[in-house]
Image 1: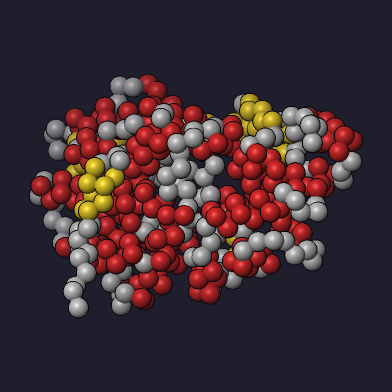
Image 2 (image 1 turned 45 degrees about the vertical axis):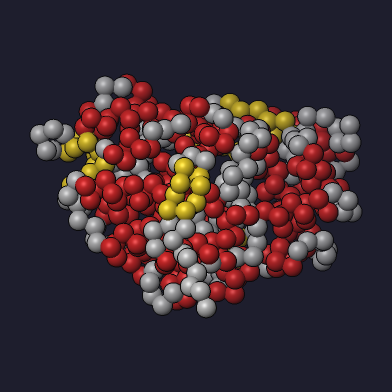
Length: 411
């Protein structure tokens, strides 16, 4: 029997040809858990604003692996010793870092599973895969969790200048057409180095870092927290919340077997067993979209209207401001909906609500970006930058929004 060629090349629209470095990485990519990422959109419902934003978590993970390969080559060229085992482990860690994302990304963390993040689920997937691959992911898991002594390997996976951010900014910029997010990832990677097992950026790369942080801030306000994307995600969350409520009242909703599993069982961190993980691995965007299309005609006014809104992109109106909306403002809209649509206060609350969003391009408290100065010393980028707006980028900016129907239902 002819042996299968596992040293494949992938043609990526961002970076060109990406090589799969070894058979183990190929086998991880081929695994059904990873292949599910082909059916999970990278940017949730952002395609409702930017029609090109239909790329997937699969695209993103492969891109991250490619950037990690570049980073390893650069660091080795600069004399940083990275063993073959460490290389394979950090490639596996970045490849699997987003494997725990559910349908439409973050919306699932508020409605189908409770109190468990996609990072927690990613780790659960990695632990099961480690068992399937006879312990070959043990070092990758250590790096992913930040437990490996060589801190820079974890920083490359999850840090202020990690390969995750360098890929998603460049990739999301490409697919949305928002040029402000197009960072020079190759230049940034070329400027990386390691001092005392911590990641640093050579001093001459300071302007590339400044551009990266500014691009991140702009992409969050202009793309990730765009008002239409925001209201669409909130409508989706409330659709799933209503579906959960109805199932809890004894309703049988049309949905796939795996989606029904999560609607009928309350899943939290304690109950997220290996069997639940197996069910989660079958859940993707298609389960939700097909169910929501069916729910348009379901005999529950709230679920039907919300589902129609999302499918037809006839969403709620959203207002965004710098101050929290008052109870008076909310109650005014709530009473209007109760009266015009003959709904109870509980039912109307699905259509009238407020919340907050925040943006912080550089979190200096969590982890700092260190510059390697020409004299061999290291210094924080905030201290060395002559850009006054860099200090502003390190501060969290919070905005508030309120959603309510823009017209009577059925109009």
